[in-house]
Image (cartoon, rainbow, N blue to C red; front, side, top):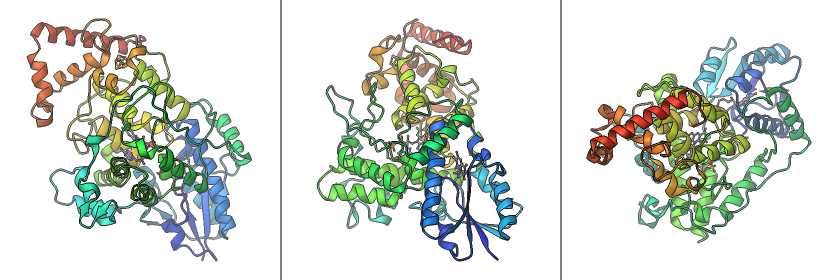
Length: 508
Ligand code: FAD
Ligand code: DLZ
Ligand code: SF4
């Protein structure tokens, strides 16, 4: 009896474990664009278009490769609307009695497929450098998990940037040389842009009709939609941006969304690029003397370290992780996160850019929107759904640990040893946003004071019990406690007033 091989929209890799297990001669590959996946959150239209266009092209590649395939388009009148519905329909059509699928990257879908009313066999997703089991073994028995130690073990295990038993260049981490503020006159490489072909145009029409009202601009659509194009993006990055990646990794500039970033996360997460090939490409550039060690190491750490680590945490912590809210933050996400006007230029820039490109780099996500949401006490589940919706690279396994854990500290410190909070001074140092802002970044209290300056102390004050014993936060509390009482009172009063105006829907 034949079997159905379900390939999900973010499993576009020819060496997928389900395809390796399948028998080309008798099994049938099933791929389906379904409302259930396109609508579990209101994804940015660019994200939906990217997923559908890449799925259609991958399906064609499978057919060219000799696979027997049933592909369902979203507007197919027979479309059952859900993946399980499509599996049942295809099983009836083909007489298949069971399903094979590489495990999805999300508890929601994992549970749905495990409970499907047709025998379904889930295979490990081995498109990661560390399997789930490998991560569990590493985590077993450790009191606190820290990315840096996992990363070192992965370096040893893969041999990436290793010289015998020692890290290349004599250090595991070169961040000391990285993260410089932007300087005048820096020139950035132009990102590659792919004009939509007829197949992508058809997807854009469909997405415009069905999801044109979701937050975000569908056009212009510039993404790579095949592995061949994604490899071009990678090669372009290695040649033109990687050499300065480390130096300006945290910089933010108006009108420059991409700087020296790689722009490969959507392709890695769809399966068009493989994490190990990406790391090897960066290592080779360093070996050839084309990029400095601080750039190669900093970049490889993001993939071999952070990307693998957050996936491990997501599965280790279980399905309840996304609901955590240890700080009991319950304010609603303000309208400015959906494009309403704000007087805060940094938010306007990061969100405006996200609306246009479905992209913001790590520091914009962490230290502008994330920092703001944390300081303002926004409900972390709303923050989580926002990040899941609006970035082209957003899938729960990677988004949730970054948002719920790293950015909102809602997991109580599983990912981060202290909350990522800062006053306006950090944003001012790393960006040119403050000079175009209605607020004054140097004002510490009063009407004109940068809201980050007010909310930073408000956050520390209201969470004193939880954080004052944290060794990494001792200096923050010492600074606060040294301020005279009148000043502290003024800051807390102004912060409270500002939050009330935010809640009242004023354009603050
Ligand atoms: P670069 O800065 O050029 O980095 C290279 C690669 O490293 C990225 O492509 C990515 O694959 C990997 N990487 C870097 N940082 C991380 C990280 N913290 N976690 C996992 N991988 C990382 N990344 C996603 O892929 N999907 C998400 O949904 C996502 N949500 C995030 C939410 C928040 C609140 C924060 C703070 C970060 C989030 N990130 C997410 C991580 C990071 O912001 C993006 O991976 C990065 O901005 C993608 O752009 P790039 O390809 O230009 O990355
Ligand atoms: C993100 C996404 C979207 C928008 N649409 C589909 C779809 O129609 N069909 C599909 O198989 N997958 C889609 N995906 C990707 C899934 O949501 C993804 O597999 C899960 O979130 C697990 O990572
Ligand atoms: Fe953002 Fe404050 Fe700077 Fe304005 S002054 S851009 S609110 S950090």
